[in-house]
Length: 180
Image (cartoon, rainbow, N blue to C red; front, side, top):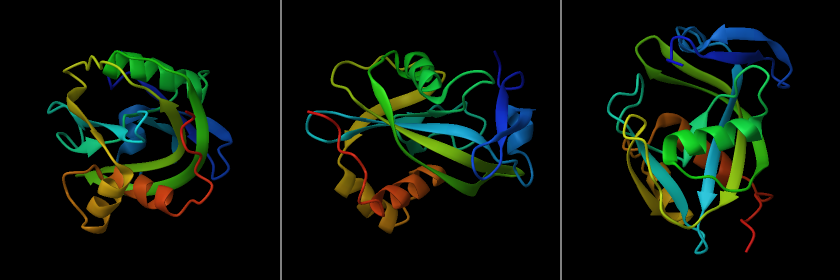
């Protein structure tokens, strides 16, 4: 399915479904609030897997972001969508659970806005990663303190929504650590 054919779930501020929209049109102009997911994978040392978005992405190319982010398709659960996108983008899979959710809005290009009710999924993973080059330019592991310092420095190497996610994560005392 191409980006133009993909559909997202429009939601209200409580994540109640309101309908569907074509993915790109939901991101145009003022943006329409829709359901999204952000996966953060942690290794045994507590580092998180980052991906650098492929050069061909329609927004925020070649910026660093969390392990995987996407949108559930209509009729698809958030965790199921997380598994699907991990397999498609990184060629991996692992157990995932929802840690928290929040809403945000950020401009990501000319006439493009991410306005999302984001479900943050967490997993533990160690092993080889097999990125799809049309999705991912490269991957690396990073510590949360390193990432928090980059956010404080407003480092443009990171995708704008990932910086917001890290600020949200840094304010949460209830963020569950990955299981041993």
